Image (cartoon, rainbow over all chains, first blue to last red; front, side, top):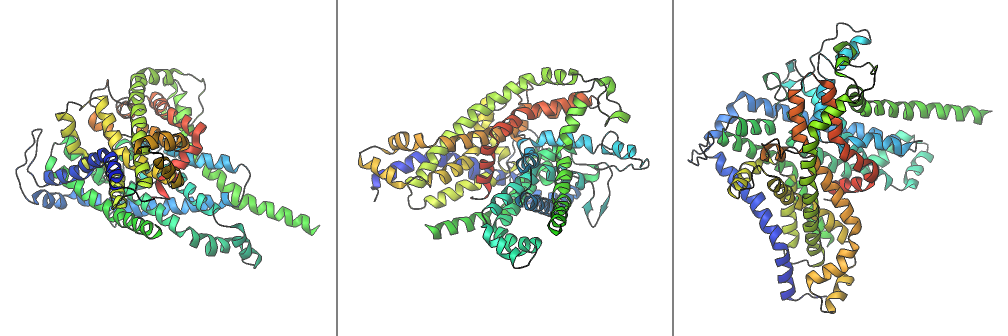
Length: 300
Length: 281
């Protein structure tokens, strides 16, 4: 049916409040933050004196921000590897058909219902060198085990070892989610396709490798983008579990921005970190949205 | 006989390749729950370093009671924020999804994609202006201010889920109704809304869970302990009751209970929301 101009106009009018709100609260605010990042604003009273890219140079040269970048880089890669491989394994085993499948699935997935605050508080306790898992390890007979999971500043090749405890907590929370995505993807693969391989004499693992994985590729890509952008934005878990850590060992840009802006009142620098963070996320998200948008256009 | 041996071999294989790994994975996922219950159910006298992993000798609810008394006002605040914000963002998302599927116009896909971008931005990139605007309209530090933030930044996701749902409703229904002379919004109310129940359930449950669990907005917008939602109160409690691990762990579990209940009883809708936000962006 051809819709009249008048009707289309009304449709746009209905949409307008949301469009205006998001135009202001997303795009307008981003520009505003960008303007703050070019300003000399320090202290509680706003100061929009233009200082060019002074904050950018200052922050990029700071040890803290440089450490943040390394931390985010390693954390994101390791989180992707951890969650995707662990989730693939779990989904594969569940997909084969086991007893109590739905119970296992619920157990793996329930952390997604919790907030990162709860996760942070509990895992901080578990990795607390004095009361947590170390005590359990002592009980098992390893009396000399005294590893400071997130308190000991160990680093090699710019990788901060305390990130491992954050990684395990984040993996604990997110693996089930990724597993659910994979499982939904696997369930959509016709059984005959896999049977054909197994009957051909190839093993189950080969069927997984040559049939399931290739079909799952787009889902794995989605999972990677989802995890990647979550990892870049990670804030709540770090804030509640480790804070910035010894010598910024567990610091990340999102936490740096928050503390620089709202604790130290260095708004110009904080805004700069926010813009950097946005750019990191955009590098991951914009190509994804663009490809989704294009394929939708083609289908229509 | 050989069949029998084969069967045994196969079930042994299954045990090693499936059940044992699944069991170990389950232990990993349940560990924090054990820690919260085990520590939370101890008395303060029993919370000693050497006995951290031992089961409580006497079960006591004193930790849970103390945490609950402390957190109750904040639990109430969380409901006051979460419920209206969920309903409002769902309602707006529903109307948007309807327009984006049944009243496509030139450039509507672009508008939709630009909207979706709002779902992915790091909140840090809008936080300074958000605080400034909330201050200037007098909503900073208040529950309505927090609701406003959650509604606005919830619109992209709710619109996405409704849009994906309405795509499957035949256009002919809307067209027939328009022939009858019904206007856009009337068509929405008479035709689309009555069919939207399942999508509303998914969106409301999803929004409830994510707003309940949200932290950064609450942390920045509400400074007064009397209006702070549960997560900020829990974070503060965990910071100040540093040695009273039983209260801390009980508090963590209490903060998680509402969303855990949603997961237990309405999990399949929650998962639908999860997958809607990821697979079909």
